[in-house]
Length: 348
Image 1 (cartoon, rainbow, N blue to C red):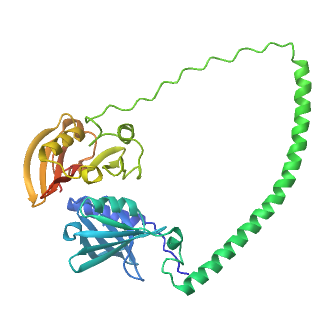
Image 2: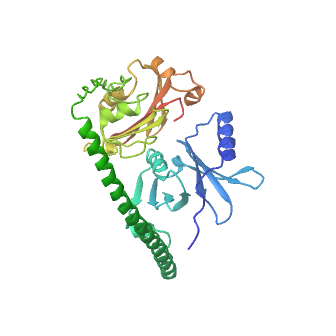
Image 3: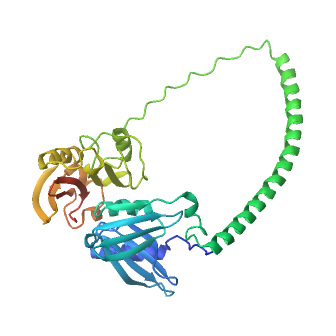
């Protein structure tokens, strides 16, 4: 049975990559362990452009060995295991594999903003180490190992049960003695009036913070999103509301990136007028349009500025732009607009 690698990222790796990206003025969302070859330690930097892969040497050096840009691919498939996940990107006859060993769901959500992702479903037992490959000898070895572990656990709990029985008998005797003592004390204090309990102070209801937007969007808090859209099916950093209709990402409890997917509704394509009305619901109320341009054949970009947004995030979240700057990316095909993203800064 193969031994799983430690999925942690050393501090020196985080510091080195974070400083490098900051000096280059590039966005950095996640740093995660990735599997590249059987030997070596590899780490991936994840942002809205794609994933860059670095190999860590014994001398604490990082060498870039590969990169994957989302714009280069037409589709992707995802297969999740207990610890890691495998993504396969495809375009025409070409494909590329990526195996991440942490934050698989969060990375999948970022990939979905750029290419469609088909998730491969497995029964739970196919996700267990030793059963994933369906190789007979691996399954036999894994079964023996798991039975041995279960036997040790059963023996451990059996010994604990014996100790608990003895402890319980002692506790019963102690409780009987305590009851007798309380009864004697009660007889002495029957005529002593009991003072009324102090009045409990009325707890103030925790109010949700005021919205920066009309219905919950860029710059709003995680609590505000829960109040507006209900239960979160994702994580607190990478949330999923209303059946994946709205997918916000948070830093310091504030949404810095919000993806709205019309494809997750019963009306998967919208007109420009309809889409713009939805945009106005998720951008700050004091937003002013700065400029608009066409990024490519399927994406249009609109830049805005919001004074109320300026003090919510550090400068790094706005790139080289003035604090409070953000963009809206409208994605469309020949049938209409199918999604849009609102994000701080100016990097599409």
